[in-house]
Length: 223
Image 1 (cartoon, rainbow, N blue to C red):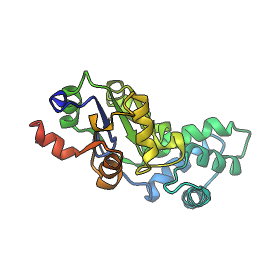
Image 2: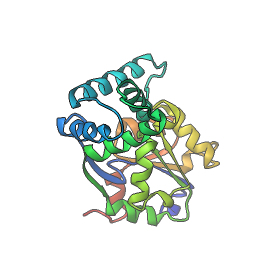
Image 3: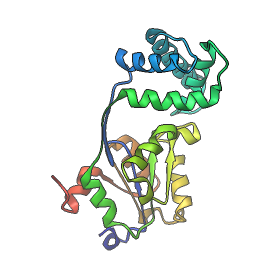
Image 4: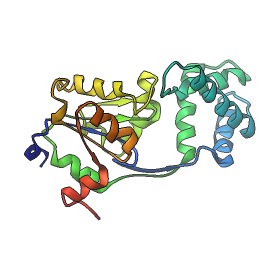
């Protein structure tokens, strides 16, 4: 159906566009669960300290970054926390990855695909398409795979891959280049839930852009 608009490529956002998600990264219960799990990995850190350390280290990395829209890698943050609180010898890098995934699992309250978005993807099955997400590859890729979405796309760019987030134009420029459409931005559609993060930067580059619910309605996919 996008072909009728002469669209040659589509860029999708991930969360609240393809995936309906709700998380609580501030809940004491989230850090309590991670703290208990870490005890079995050789790391002794109480929930309150874990939360404070995590929030502080993320903020420090954000503040130190030269980027306008900085991003961190949470597995590096957790690796550092684990190293500082280890009670026996650990593999910090590997434990940082595992802790990131446990933290995500503990914080998730809802994780479902939007059925309307799956049908929308299927409408443009023969068109090059990708995802640009302000997300952490360490667990976001697994969520896409678990929900059966990852293989629909030619590639996925996560902000954690590059150290900066949307609305940074470079993410969209990279996607255009990887699709071979850097000289045809007007033939590419950006679909997402955020005007600031998905619609505005795409239009600045000469792309078309559509809010996700508008796309559902356009193609008769509304609930």
